[in-house]
Image 1 (cartoon, rainbow, N blue to C red):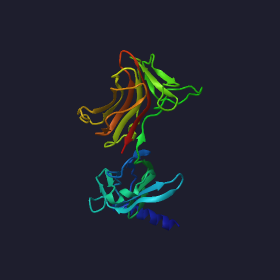
Image 2: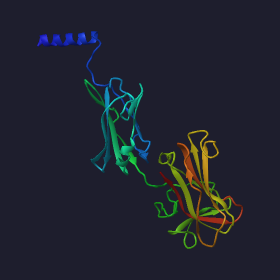
Image 3: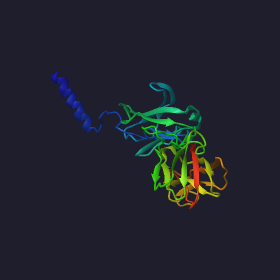
Image 4: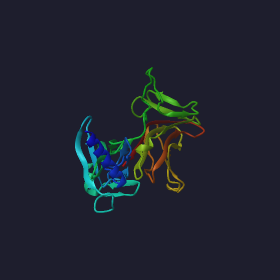
Length: 302
């Protein structure tokens, strides 16, 4: 036994002197898609991870999940080499990037996914330290507005503005009953200079290239009532947008009306760059009269 211990120490010393210690690839991390990210299209989708300096090849695994179990392998691509060659992986000294090829686009259907990567060399395999990560793939339009019909109730079963954020509300308020709604039983009454209500959208739901729409049902005794709702989108790129000033805005303008509700829509907006912030504001800036608004909708479509 003592001989074997001495032999083991001798071999270790020789390995150090020779500059060779058998070890699997060093630890690394998955980068993108980040955990719980929403992905809307397979075209242009990439998987990135920090490079493992000792890796010879990488294996990428992407699974579509049910509520509890794996139900399908979407990508199982093994033996990927860091070099820029015939496979879909390229690596720098810091980051590896796998670009999903067009032949795999059809594999991505709406649902929840997990992904992970193994780094491999002759001495073993190392899975990403933070793997697996998860993301949701949704190619369908998404409604961004909550309580757009003003039908939600609080704990006392009374109409509530939540999650609308009020600012300077004086006489503007939720009204329920005949004449105040387009659908349901309630709508929002905006009086002249009566303040603003707004919602800030989840920017993770808004992707460059998506189409954003805005619509609502409006009744007014003031013609024209002008702009009664608008969405302001601020981008992460300083010169993005139609104005090349880093933002875009779409507005819902009421120039006609009747004694009943009419449906109005803003001109659709194609998002020009990654979104930093997007806010929907509802306000009647007139000096007289009132405007009733209901069924406010903002939809983003991939």
